[in-house]
Amino acid sequence: MQTLDVISINIWQMLVSLANLAILFWGVKKFLYKPVKKMLKARQDAIDVQYTDAENAKNEAMSEKKAYEEKLSGAKAEADGIIQSAVNLAKMRENEILEKAKNDADVIVRQAKEDAELEMTKAEESIKREIVDVSTVLTSKILEREINSDDHKQIIDSFIEGIGDGYDAD
Image (cartoon, rainbow, N blue to C red; front, side, top):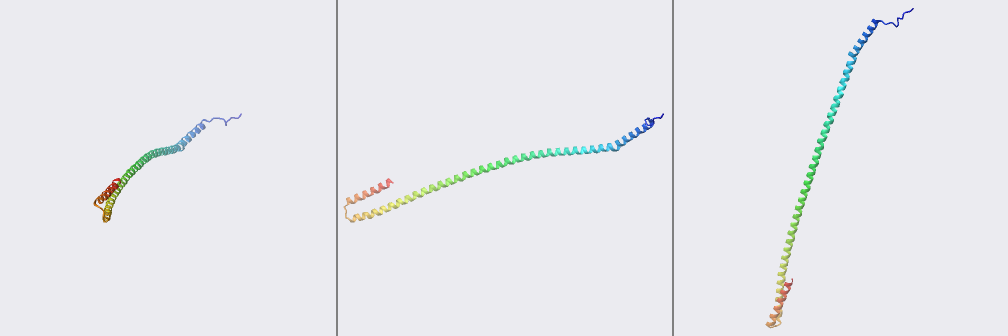
């Protein structure tokens, strides 16, 4: 009969194979697994740092955006205040100009009235002088006609009454 050497179990060979396997595991773990794990850990740490930096940058950008929006709203409020102040100043200036123009117009009207009254007075004086001159001429003409003193007195009185009535009616 034949022996089955092929199927037989050799303990020494098994122990050597197990030792080879253990050495191979140890070598793979020491020289391959640990450096790869260390490299993966370093990459993961770098990625975590990048995520943290990105999050910090995002938060900083958001805070800067808020500060910018606050400054912008403050600038808008300040601009509105400046515009309102300018409008109020313009209204005050407008009122001053209108008041000055009204006062100037009142002065011009008053001066025109005074000038008109002065001209009227001058015209009245001139008319009175002309009336006196005309009455003198008229009297001399009438006297040339030989009237008596009663007629003369009556003419002068009626003339003077007519002059007085004419000026009182105006």
